[in-house]
Length: 473
Image 1 (spheres, rainbow, N blue to C red):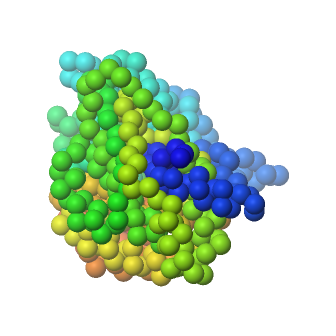
Image 2 (tube, rainbow, N blue to C red; image 1 turned 120 degrees about the vertical axis):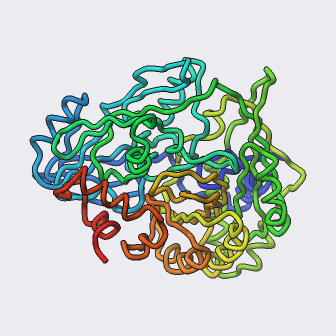
């Protein structure tokens, strides 16, 4: 029939809408599909008249900073911090949806602080500049026969931005990226350089691994690495009731497992990745842009008739098709995103994950405008003080809305569900929690605040959003 390819939140793991994509594409060909041309993968920082402008990847967050410096070395960054007055915020790819970056002070780009610095194959660690994009880092490590233990599904993020916000992939035995950080170099707001290593600064590193840029600007990161490895990916479609029942067992059976629920279809896509030791590699071409456009068009035509929308979608699904791929880990686990969106994601204890997902599905399907798949992943717990996975194995549940459409319901209707299941919000994804609520969720919250004040006594690394998170009652 057609390519069995569909990606949940483009272009994720190239998963499938089976035959639905092409068939629906033919159905709606007479009215044309929505334009899903490749969007810019980086935020814009431009001068408009006399005012500097900055916005994040989705266009949701904006700022008019006093300056937009781009230091080319750690020494330049150090001099900048000494010379700058007022607030300082750093950004990597601008892929956070919360207001972590906006300030009227200085917004520092890490783009020129990029590249692999060194590898230690005896210790199995690698040191890189903080502004190195995950895609660039993965290719550089691969050239050395090395790889990261896991990756998130967005590879335009910088390593500093990813670890600072608790970015993660999926895998019941695999923690988030920051858990593999063994060393950091941080330039404080006064220009002083602090070097941390797990062998001598265990508590400080536990605070700094996920710190939202509030301790200073990270300049270098040292991480544990593995020998480069290949993965075997399988993608299959099943009724969501069946997948929800099987998900915990599948998570324990596979190195990586996740699922995506396709709203108003009754079906979900399951994705597994396992170590592959064979020699034959394959990577099917993605048809994700077209599939997402078809789902959106289906919503536009039948959004007022949810039962008919479900019937049409199910009519064309082919549950017998399975997509498979075998390739390098970084080629399968992470990629860039063609379609812009806004996102809210929370992390709940693993034993509450399935129950929470059921309620989130119900909450999302109260809104006929929803068409983005709901993402469900597994993450191993860790000990970073502000890690959303601190002290507990977790499940993450992410909901999305197209960047040009309303997104308020993602917070208004879903947040009460997440809260009821002891959820912790992703630091880079939309939420409305403040200091009082967050303090109750993190056992080491007071300890982190003490460290933060030691590193930045004047609060220059805080903007309005971080003051809401850390200071305001």
